[in-house]
Length: 501
View 1 (cartoon, helix red, strand yellow):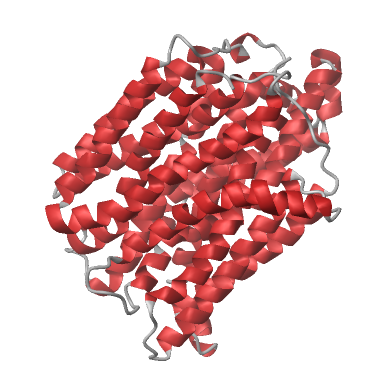
View 2: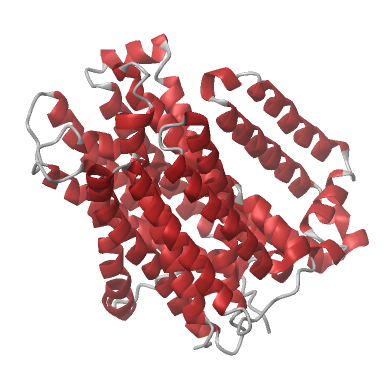
């Protein structure tokens, strides 16, 4: 095992404690303190919108971090300097606990820092391996994901107590201290790391240059790309309905989606200028983006455990000392159990039965399990809406199903994204993987916005269910359809092995 790995793992454990420590109390803090000026019937919706807008930012800025690292500064320097901004963001939350603009500025800095380093730390792990020891990489990625949840577990358990007993300054300040410790641990290993030089800016056959050439070679592809730009401009006109962050992200997705489709139509025309190998590398990236797009429904379900599921837990019977947001500690606790169980028991047993457990099969099954979790939580909501007193223990089953899906999708996806990415685009591809989380949370904002319309509200009432229960079953169906489409597409996906030689 490369000796520098413990520094990266230690950094990740402290950083994840800091991130989940603040994230898991954010909805509760907004509901009980920062948004008290908003009428109570509207406060839940506003708190959910702020939370998911923040998460969109966290998973949008990986694009910026990946671009800076691959083109200019390298992964280590980009991680270190953005980590310092991250620490400043935590300080803002602790200092501006009763100042809306100051608090939101802190959320922005945390989104920039956390999002910017997110793709780089996992791809930096991959850089420490090559073809000779790549068999160890999946174990380290599993360990990497295990330590993420180790930090998340204690943060989910302790921060709600600190918020209640000591106030927001302490509850948001402690995660800031852990982020500073994380930065120092990462800095301490600086002389031991393998540093891969950023070469994307020197590469005449980079992803964007090949795509630009392909689009310039025909009117058909250009027309498709321009259609995406036109739709993005139209979408921006509706920013007042869905919020400026959601509108900008929607515009970006439209431009990327239609631009990629237009380039795909004409990729072969870029071969004379860039060569067959460069064009095939771009084709690999575009195939990956289709897979990532089909994973987005999973994230729209997964991240609502910190908003929709907490709000449901508020309606359930529980001990007086137990805070609704503490239920989230169950998720990382189960992850720490499931990762070793899957690797030592489940996967070997299935292999002996003749069922090959590929990365894509894991991910497709994980999306389906998330849908099943929401079927269960939706059924629970129907009972609550009918006036039954439900114990919070009823949330254990959906948490277990969702967490099993998370292990299959997220832990597998980290190594999968790295292994499939061409060598010059490791940071950017991992950024696209994180962008799938942004789009997943964008679906949530769009769904929340749609149910505010009178026509949709009237239709939901005609079904005899509450808006909350209806949305839960909608998201469950969304994920199950995505799982089926993912499985069909994955059957034709050609696997790559892009570790360093």
